[in-house]
Length: 102
Length: 511
Image 1 (cartoon, rainbow over the protein chains, first blue to last red):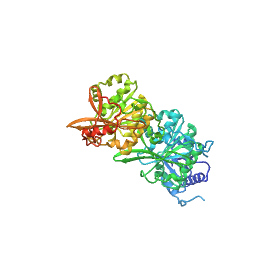
Image 2 (cartoon, rainbow over the protein chains, first blue to last red; image 1 turned 30 degrees about the horizontal axis):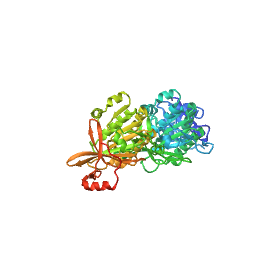
Image 3 (cartoon, helix red, strand yellow; image 1 turned 90 degrees about the vertical axis):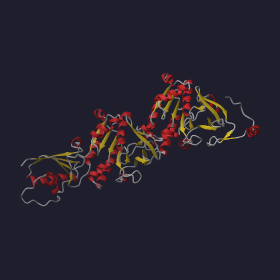
Image 4 (cartoon, each protein chain N blue to C red; image 1 turned 45 degrees about the horizontal axis):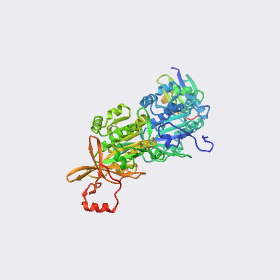
């Protein structure tokens, strides 16, 4: 399986940012067997990158590889929508139901 | 939080938008956000862009343009015609875009809670990099369209406005309205976004478009009330015509100038006043254009500069007429003492005419200006628009201490009052009537000075003739009454003699 490449834009180390990162890592572990690379960008530190990618809201997840490039907004708590939007095939093994992180 | 002067008043930022700072009592509240609301096509984006452009050109203040709707490329192209070279300003670091326009290829899906921290970070970054003093955001409607009417969007916009305040920048934020008169904005953003609201309107009135700007509120500070007409000009952008603001500054001089006709000067008590507005009213062919021509020639003879706006006759015709009365317009133009501008009234709206006329007056700096005729201009405007035009033009001319002679055409041959006259007679200082008088089966002409503000004047209706030397004013009509009403009636000479005997006759009249 091709390695996935993600960019995740967040604003500072807020609970919402932490939640988005945790959700993403969980989804990647369950759906991609951890075969991914993630770049986390804090817009407060690197606003010019947000400008270049024309990111408006945080958190914004950008899937760069494999193409096509997709964007998902929000803290990624809606696992089903995240998977559908990123066109990530869930593994055949039974997976836990989509839900909130504790 | 906000910028206050020593006495607690809110400081102003002069926008540089022509006319706006006058009605805003100095400019937008400095360090705050002003909401600019308007319907589609009301020039919100032009206002937003001009706010930044004027900052760069007049005050060397840099600006950040946040666009939610059009792409930066579209905006650069759309405002180039106003003479704003955004690309060059971007290269010089004076103008920065924050591009938040929708990216069609990347439609985003919402999967949980979010905020607009990225947008805010980008705006703050752009402001800091450019050291910007001004920010324009255009338009909020697009944000709602993309993210819905959620409380999140409202909360985030509020957060952005608060952040702009902390940065100390003065900002304008545009928002849509659904109707010209009704709720302030479509999404009721004024309730949480801004203490200051400006409304742009583009109203259809009698089949004519009329643009106005109104400052609805500046919290805690003053501004002019009501709607002010504005126009959008190539090479300039929005130009507001602050009519009532100008009326206040008029002065009044007692210096007399010649009308170009010695007898008429005498009838007026020694000539027109230097900064007065004279209305000449008469039916077609009574001699209005002749009076204009003599007014110009009189100015030339006194070494004054003269400007003639002609909306009825062509240049050739005017010059030929003048020649017929022994007046050399060509020679006057060669000496740069006269300029004749002929235009069709229909080529532009009245606001545009006014701005162009003012620009010409500013450039040529005439001592006297004639407009032949106002009635022709009246055709292309609403009554309200026409009145505003006349007030705008007259007050501008008075400010510059110029004399103005306007003509108005009466609809009927005999007597009558023109529509033009009815609307503007109170604005003019003097009114001269030219009338046909039917006597013994012959059409004769009469002239009278109906009104001469601040001066005594001849009350007679005098007969005049037109020949190769122009206007020859003769004796008063002594045995006719009812000329002004258009129903001249002859009075027996015995009766006249009796009346004459009752009052001592004044100075002898000359032919």
